[in-house]
Length: 216
Length: 419
Image (cartoon, rainbow over all chains, first blue to last red):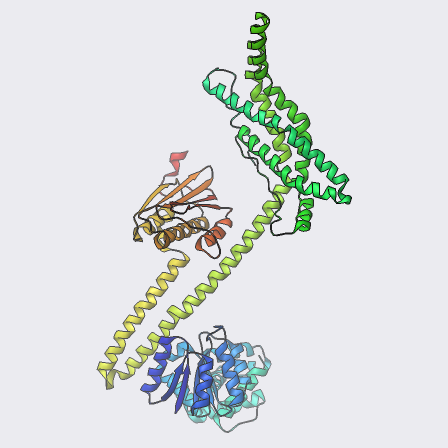
């Protein structure tokens, strides 16, 4: 797997590179601004772009704008955006910007090395990864809606994990229930929310996200 | 302009008759003599102004007025200075600024300037009632001289009049001087409304500046946190996470990572500490202004003498502004002045906190542009504070700051003592 990192802070750029390299992920380049990122994307074959939201020159949301641009121009490329704080608006803009695989994680999440590497792999494999905090914020807003109110506590937990991009097996492991039970929960969630039942994980995640979108 | 109590004149009782009283009266007579001398320019200026207005449409009048307006300001200012000396309290006046404007722009500014209209009115007073009072006060001395001449030339009887005239002079001069100066002040000072309008404008401007300042401070703090401590913390997390994974497979590498993590942790703490110091220095919270300034002085490479005369604590925001003002001045002294020593005095008198920071360096400190001192001035302005920089080329530099504020009584002093 070939990854390009865009992070303006030298210490973090270095840390991310080390972290991914240690897990046998090929870091093609680590750059500190979006122009260099664009150049790398033109010259190299890249699977995943890991991009910090806040980059020079404006230090606002340059990275997010760049990520959205990349998703529109290169549908095949997976983008994982790292943000210093939860901003559901950013997550929403990012999700709305294309069909390819995408991720939005808090920077703090990086400190859980295993989970972060998993997220990179998942995005590279075509999955969608959202930070649990972002999902929680979206669900909290959705609480006001009637269909959501009909979900049981357990079903909400399953929904949150689905939105984060977990597979049935992963959800089962996390909640200490059987995979069959997860399957039942998901079917009921889909029925209650009036969503078409999707077979593969990623389409399922996207359906959930689309639902949260419309209702938040 | 709040205090209306004269000082010079008030300290002149009729008795005792002595050298100090004589000198003061001679000085007053000299001031009033200047009033008399200014009779002619004032008369001419008033005449020119009136003729100028009458003939303004014929352009010649406009030219006359252009000459008369600045000269009127000068004459009025001489009277302000004289009146200020007599009363022992400055007579202030603010003219609207017309710098950088063409002749028409200046004329428009002058037309709307109430101070200038008042000056014209003052000219009328100074050539009538004003010069009458002043002449009364000045007359006895030449009268005494002429009586002496008459006594010598004509008849010894004239001698008898001299003590009378001199007694009248001794008694009346302070009264006449005060009367004249008070009248001048009433005519030459801004009215209460104008004073208040100006004050409101000042307060509005300083509040806007303070808000700008706080917003900029917040941005700086957010920036510092984002680039500093927060980034280091994340990096620290990555290192620890990697080390955890490597613990079993490659303990040596894990140990190295943890050592690095220790360094990163220390620099994160340093970052946070310097940030906290920049927001509100801990020593200021612990020890108050005096202690914090002493602590500041100890840190510098320059020997700094600190003398403090405070009976209590200024309010916290003033304290903070004062602390950063001193810090900025001392930093300038260390960085730019090449000074060998510096001194700081803190004193509170008559409801005003006075802060002086001086150094024996090469001087040349200014408040221009984005200098730190301009920032200090902005911060102090929020508390109605003022800053005066005396820094001639070659030094020394003395920065005097004043902030009106009350002191709270110190916590260590038992309150029963003051009862």
